[in-house]
Image (cartoon, rainbow, N blue to C red; front, side, top):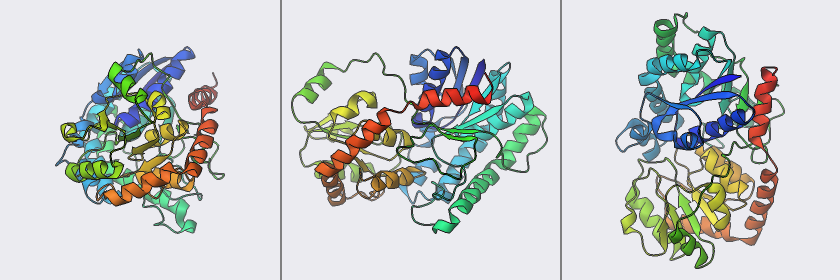
Length: 410
């Protein structure tokens, strides 16, 4: 069968969809992935046919832009939702046209991220099935509140209602421009209500977050969608650094930007107190030339290769990095900034493999030291190793591919 796959977000949003595309291709299906141009490297390297969607997610995270403001300041739901809606609303007309053209002749359309509403509209116009995917559990449940709300902010009895409320607010933020694109590009009538009937596949490990008992049958908790181990060789300098001493601390905040780099840099240096440290600058813009000699700066290194060679991972709490650290069997120190990151930080803390989440916008060296000390504890490492063994037994990509084939009765 032939699938068009469309998502829009950071690299953490696109890489799991690239893994899903590889899994579908291995089963003999044709795939075509559309995403932000800056995030398509892993799919392109794997030989997946790709095309860029309009927009510049990295630019949207640059200092002074709306999404960077959500990271740098309160990072609350309303501000983050407005920033995301601004990105989508500026591009939805182009996305709808680009997805429509790419999906012509496809048997189904797989959609995710900010491009989901455009994709659902295209599937309707082409009269093909739409399959939703995600790394954030948005299907309503009583088990936990919407991941976009602060941890503990909602009383338990209101958990399910919080999902409906947040999903509805997001739809209202996107509805006007989505309906304009439906009319101009697809000749469809306006959509009045949020889509709820399509299946949802989540690239989420049931070890990290058990599947809620009250989810509908068309919601799957598949497991992590992880890229196959690449034919990758570390640089001689990285190999030497790893061989020269005890496993280092890893620090990396992925696609996060817009925070106070000076404060973060000072806190990192003071907290690690001379320990061997790997630092991945990502999109942070941190001046790595100011780091002391105990820091080794790395570029893009496969987490599956690197994390097992570290003592712990200090990260922002994105879904992908949280999964990769847990799968590697190492403790985490989580510094969430915005969006669903506090939700994953809370899950890691609940499982006992991370201390309480830290404040990414006001990171203090003393608090970071305490979290590092928690990750260093023998009982923390034992729990992390146990979770890693359990996650290693999962094959989330195979589960997702089987679900897609089942849904389409292949």
